[in-house]
Amino acid sequence: MTEFHFTVTHTHGAARRGVLTTPHGVVNTPVFMAVGTQGAVKAVTQRDLEDLGSEIVLANTYHLYLRPGADRIARLGGLHKFMGWDKPILTDSGGYQVFSLAERRTVQEQGATFRSHLDGSEHLLTPESAVDIQAQLGSDVAMVLDECLEYPASHDRARESLERTLRWAKRGRDHFVAMRSRSLESDSRDIEGGRPLITNPGQAQFGIIQGGTYTDLRRRSVDETVAIGFEAYAIGGLSVGEPIAEMYDVTEETTRWLPADRPRYLMGVGTPVDLVESVARGIDMFDCVLPTRNARNGQLFTSAGRLNIKNAEYAEDESPADPECTCYTCRHFSRAYLRHLFLSREMTSATLNTLHNLHFYLDTMRRLREAIVFSTLEEVRQSYRRIFPA
Image (cartoon, rainbow, N blue to C red):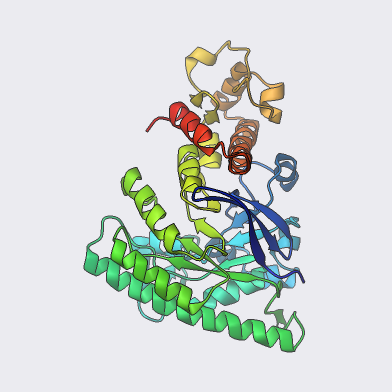
């Protein structure tokens, strides 16, 4: 299978354009990954995603583990085959969902014990089991299990959480390397108890940088996580309630310390301006539910800013949501029709709004890639600041 590797092709200041090669295809960076929580991006089909030019999607380990189960997906040929998507997939570790359960989970050194939101059954997620689950899913990128820290948190609390994350990272990496070595020595679909253990032997594993908003802890996290040795690195623990300026500062500092020859992934971010500002600070990969969730709630991202389609002013507006947009929704439907669908609670409303918002996000990334090549990033940056003021 194709090995995972990354090449930076152009730079402009701290911003980079690159090419990420995975077993299921090439991804041009900077890239935005639509969130397909349960193996599907809500309200749209995989054909829609391909038509939009999406090159990689994110799927949620926690939800797929609970339903339909990683064993079942593995028996059915892995997540790519199961969901009918032959392009790259990144899976998170499930840690964020577990830690967001609050009253339903307990964190200890072994891992995190939690109760399913579906039926209340008890489960234990460990650094090792997070590797096993994602190996069965067969994603192209698997995230290591980390502890997601709340905001605000004291320095002592952030340090304790970071140290646990570092211990978990070492355990997760050791288990990942051992499993991969075993698969290379035998059949890549190593069978144990009738179930495939690995459905994508070319899978890569990303480490996650934590440390809250504390510079010294972020630096320590980078140094010790890089020393463990992963294919690439993600910045976690941001966009959890901290001031936007602080998020940008932590991102800029942390990115500066990460290896230049590896992709840098900022997890769970963000608004269109967040993407632009973070690309300017050297980030290569993003994911966020914002474009799809806001679409289902009737908010569209446009070249003139945010548009709330449910507003009465659009009741007889024959213009498209965004006159400058070339997406399917804007080419065929008026604001008046989109408002009607939303107020009527038609399922088509979510589909058309989601198609538009994803097009806007993916087009933003295309513009950023071109701006890096042609050294016009500052112009794009200022235009987005005007359109989406803080």
